[in-house]
Image 1 (cartoon, rainbow, N blue to C red):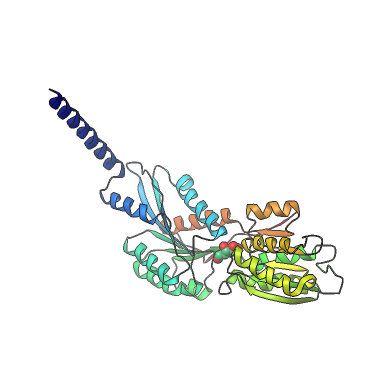
Image 2: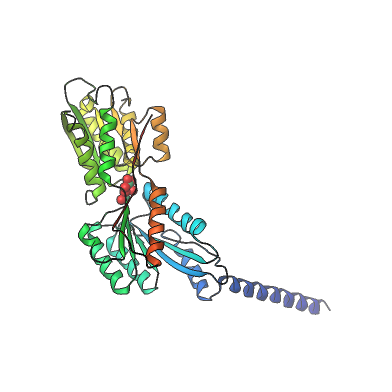
Amino acid sequence: MKKFLALLLSLALMATLLVGCGGGEKETGKTEDKAEDKKEDTKKEDETKDEVEAPADSKTVKVGITIYKFDDNFMTLYREELQRYFKEELSNNEVTYEVTVVDGKNDQAEQTNQIQTFIADKYDVIIANLVQSSAASTVVNLCKDADIPVIFINREPTAEDLDLWDKVAYVGADARQSGTMQGEIIYDLDNHGDLNGDGKVSYVMVIGDPENVDAQYRTEFSIKALTDKGIEVEELVAQRGDWDQAKGQEIVAAALTQYGDQIEVVFCNNDAMALGARQAIEAAGRKVGENIYLVGVDALEEVVSYVESGDITGTVLNDHVGQAHTAADVAVKAVNGEQLEKNYTVDYVKVTK
Ligand code: GAL
């Protein structure tokens, strides 16, 4: 009798499990989704795919996004907003945007492979934050052959590359504007940045990735904003920090050891490096606003609170929300076969106390 009961129980259990499995399959629709799920488990670090429940008769649009590297403060905010916007604001009963975001790991060869995989998997549109802007022509040609529109974000390709096909566009901000605003923040101080009154502004420039126009323009235009107003400048150090906080800290710590009080302003091409610079400045016993100035770009939350407390002189809002929404809206236009403009530009905004 006991054995019979045990048999009945295990049969009931099996039946429950089978029903459970069946239900699961109905939800995901296709059996290959399971393989996809497994892939997901092992690839969590470098790929995120939104689990979307498409209403029965809605159309699914596959959006492939590749980010130059996940380990970048600003691009993390940007990609999270892109995913949220596609899922929560653009998907509706008629159309579901199925978004896959992959990590380019700062390796152009790897990123080009990812784009080829999107193409092989018949994605409807690709959004690419290139590792190297110089890869744009290769990417445009791959997408053109497959007739899949491509929207470049954040790292601006040349006008020539954008002209290669009409289903390609760039969404970004004009880095000249952010550089100019950094220079203006310093110019607007009572002493125009000349703390020691020797008639010139002596500065350290912490550069992002020099291959990138954001780094080139911010470096050039921050200084140009001062010299255009007749301010004399002296460059003490200019070094690449690859947009990275730890590198920003190292560069500024070394500069402070070498030049000490001579340094009046530290310009950082972005906020992550400015956060590193702030640590180095504090460690050297200097005080922002009293005997040194520090500016960044992006307006990361942490930096904005340092601007409020006076520990960073100023920053410039790099509007990741505006850029993410524009990029997604342009991608939708491209999928719908609408005519695209070449450039979509979102404004920067100055942030001071
Ligand atoms: C810039 C941003 C940097 C970094 C870089 C990556 O626009 O200010 O923080 O994210 O893009 O290309």
